[in-house]
Image 1 (cartoon, rainbow, N blue to C red):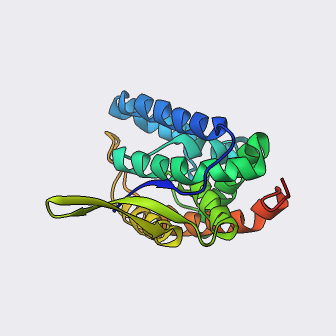
Image 2: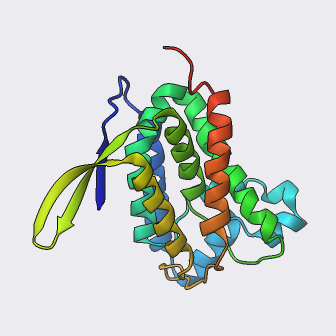
Length: 223
């Protein structure tokens, strides 16, 4: 299945959602342009490395935010941006542009802290927008629990579209991200990702914090 769009129309242009997608793409293009040595240095500076965060939080805290714009491979990037494009617009409309941006970054930072909490001495870089997007998905589920997503389905040589509950699509998002978290980075750095790390706890953390924070940011406010 390949999700195309949700069926909740928006009345605004989701500038910040588009902007976040654009920034993630630009940063990833920069990643793949780097040599092995420069990419390793880039990741050590801007990804969350739990051990460094533990020993020098006063300087490393910024990586809780910069790591949200790094990705470990093309599929990691494409799948994350697809889900942000489909579900982010409605949440941006409900929260408003600037509150949405703060909400997005906060969910990502808190998700990264969840990963840090269970592996405080790890030297493996933690990166990706999945925690932030998990927060968006958590907000979407409680605001649009009955929503459906128009989805492209491949049946052998036949292609059709069906309306699938958003809950199913979001479930698939978690499954594919768990798989992504268990394989090595697909960039030239050839760095491994710890199993049971970011692909599990950061996603769960981001989702839970999305559910908690979104109402505080005005998810259910009256128009």
